Length: 222
Image (tube, rainbow, N blue to C red; front, side, top):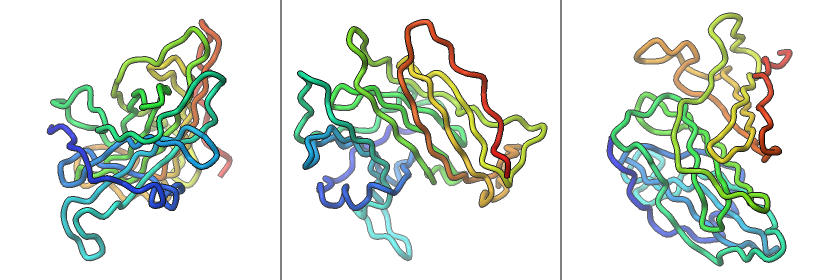
């Protein structure tokens, strides 16, 4: 597995336009950056930005093809960075990526961030979600980490219903993901029962020290 190189600069106007989009990549065919900035309302924003490195029918090299974003007003006494771009971290560059991954990191504002990614058999990421929070007073963000996403169980899995999974991230937050497998294609390789792609999002929040994540919820009533 190769480390992820830096991408080309992203303009603030483009990031604003891409706020509702999601995805990144884990192969050198595309680059992924963590871009932090302060928006017009004074909020600390960080976006996960994907930059294409080669041409397809619809994409030219250097095109910014996907992004996910998280913004919040900083607490009293915290000043967000005006603009800073960092390489998307991979704490285990020699380990293969699974079809769904959870990555934790710290952004340039000092916020604890967690991303979820759906990795296709091609090595590109189809979808991501990003959630960042300033740590509560007296707490610091956790380490950069990468782990497999908690998939729903094989038994009783309903591809036609949105599925939910809860877990603790490396920052000590409780996170919940929602995933729709309805459009997922069957995998080209391996035995993954949930298909090649999936629509995915997440939300995370700090809990009191010592609190335990809730039991993993079931799917919605589809």
